[in-house]
Image (cartoon, rainbow, N blue to C red; front, side):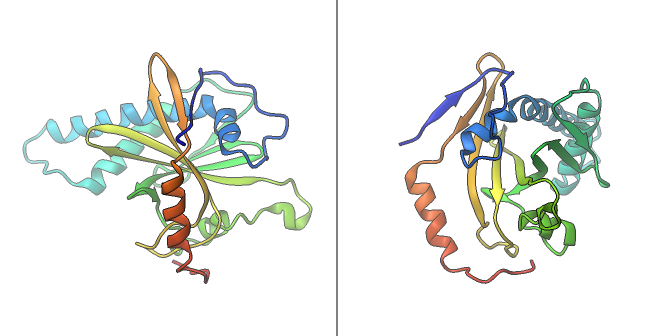
Length: 213
């Protein structure tokens, strides 16, 4: 059964935001996720305008994606300060949402999943859910919010990685919540149908060893 939850723009985080309910986690992060959606909506428009402004500029999908992300960063930097979350902007127009106990890395999708962590050590630790808990620090949950534009429509999904995978391999995710946005209805968080979850589990059975990517 495909379950749909429509929510407004303001939600009170659950008492135990580190719980296992993906929908509750997504709802707790609704306000910054909406800001990210709007930022990338402006970003993709800015990237389109860049290539449309000069006939010599042949479409380059990698440059387009970077321009969209760059414009999204500029938009998020203009967001009003919040007491419940903050932004970090690593080099190369990176975006990270910090809303304790969640750390959310924003990245472009690779197909229907987030990109693999590659060889980057910090990303590999992030995807493996390594945190300061090992050293007596606070428990955190590392999440990934991926974005893409498909058939002219902006799409986002919030997911929780649980390991490493190589390029073109199936992503190792504990869960994934597709996200839709409507200016009037607000955000919609969807639970993937049971068939999709079954396919994901079947794919993961073939990749038991952790890989460095």
